[in-house]
Length: 183
Image (cartoon, rainbow, N blue to C red; front, side, top):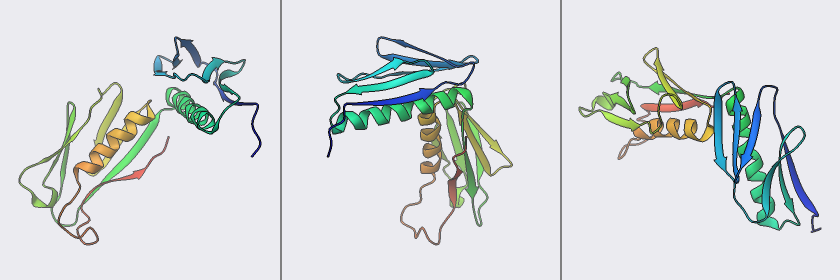
């Protein structure tokens, strides 16, 4: 396998977006929204380029090249998050016992899943300004935000709270499921 001289990933910024780097913390902002993340590694660096940001590594080894690609993906997600945002859609499915979904502060309550007397609770660890969770039409849940990891983790927490144990999943399919991961 040939040895590479350097690895360079360019991340473009749209008009109105800006990025700043201070002490290995990259901040991307647009229209009042901003995301910050720390990128620290001895060989891989993030630097400002003419059209946006650049992830650069000189004389990379295999792991350095992988880290550079991962950082470039994180930066692309940050840019897309402040420009458009991320939106996950979930749907509550039930066959006999109708579920009731309520968002109260930093938790989501799922009542009457399989006729259970004790409601299930999904944790929503971030504030509504960071990740917004809405219930529409009693069965559709929308999770929106600018940070892809926080939106995805919130959707996963909601889906996981409805996990059924000690029953055949092919027969007992009630729960809340992620239906789309659109932008």
